Image (tube, rainbow, N blue to C red; front, top):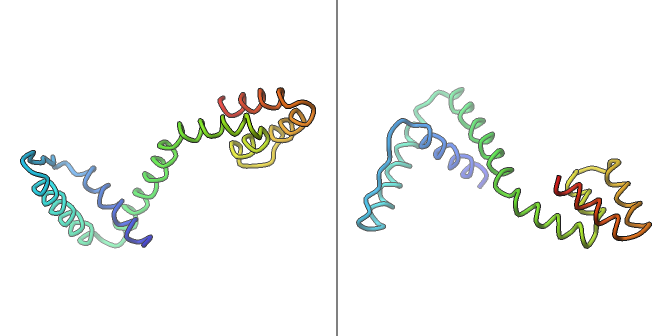
Length: 129
């Protein structure tokens, strides 16, 4: 399963990096599906014709590209969810934002224990900044 996902990303990377322009006919969806299928098959053949070192480097590039896009795609949703969580459980929101138990987490915990409102304000400040 994981290998198929990696191969799919490599294929898309090859397609986007190729200098060929891909045009789809707007007549029917079956034509565009067939075109995508043909392009994918050609990209896979091109990928298999590469040397082993080139294939490994392409896979590394695809993984790097995928990680970068994965981080960038969910930032708005994560920020919104962390802001809601900062109102409900401020220390947990700070911990999830920072991914470690550091000084910001402990300060948020102390502020929340002293009085709820300063903990919420500080957690929102950390999450939204």
